[in-house]
Image 1 (cartoon, rainbow, N blue to C red):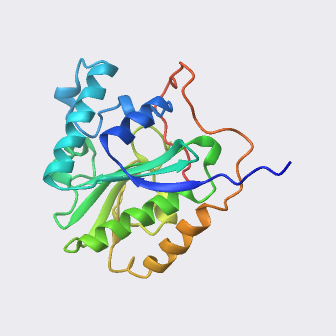
Image 2 (cartoon, rainbow, N blue to C red):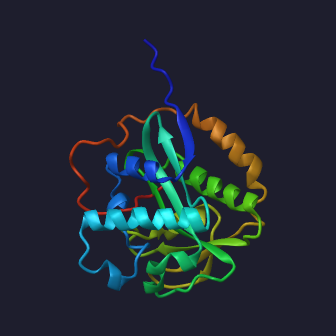
Length: 226
């Protein structure tokens, strides 16, 4: 019997989709590292952080608009990107290469489930983000903090960022700040459309997508998103 191809779709990050990420076991659901400064994060447990993240997402959606894209494989979310104006991301101030440039949006998170890493979904998510920002107009660039020495935690791999078109804006041995000029991403529009079409035909990986099994990952890591 022939196995039907897995279906892929890209959706906007909304409160319901954020909840689905938690049900799938994505650790970011219980992390508010970007959304709160260190003082406000102090002493919060996972449930508190989840509530703070809900409140943050609601504020950003109301004041700025869509701030993320999520890729589903069949009915399971397996990766996402989150981005917002730097003024709405107080946690970024703790990084040594802050602040983000005044003309840029900040990409905070790029996550793909480990079993899907290396399959190009991370690039597709970044391209979907770029398409969203280009279509809004008035946004010149996206910046992101990269993790160089030991990628993981809440900071995206600097190597991944370089692969998808970011260039170093302010160097640092551990957490450089990188930038992607959206004018250079204008040529991505056709590529994004074609890539989203190809998602339908991507071969299903040998291991299943993340799903709810009652266990949360022990640590919050950001693998090579591919």
